[in-house]
Length: 194
Image (tube, rainbow, N blue to C red; front, side, top):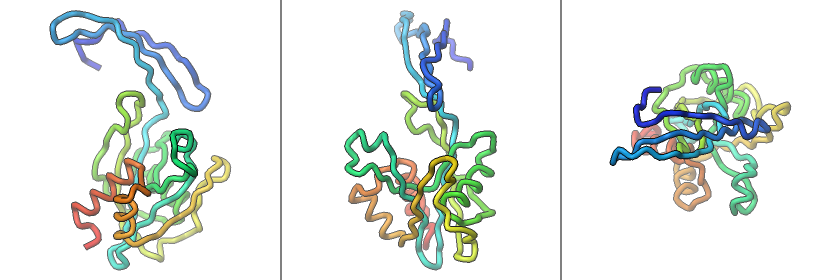
């Protein structure tokens, strides 16, 4: 951390109930040279990884569907979201994490993953950086039904669908998850499915 426009940083832990919510108080130098005191809250849930599984021959993608309480309380009628497979890194590197999450959530065991980018998803309030991957899959890579880890209270539906249908669901607003939209658009722009 080397920003000369910020000094006197103080951190106060507000909650560690689910992840960690911190309040930061600091002095910030404006463009005109004036110093002002600012307060911001930042939710620290760790970093994560997301992946789009695609099959060139079948022209399909594998997505997941699960209940997301924050979307439900913000007007998502049933609270379910269609998403790309994703998970927190915990103590893993991004590549190992996404392979593990892919198998747990979708039932596919992929070896070769391609990192395409990394991005902050909500930099105004969340510390998380997300690592984005793609991987080709074939039917013989299916080693289980997927669905997530029961001990983590995951209840995930695995969706294999034509790429064209996923793009349609994105354009109609049935897919509203940013990471999924980014991965689908990447696949479309880079013609991953031919």
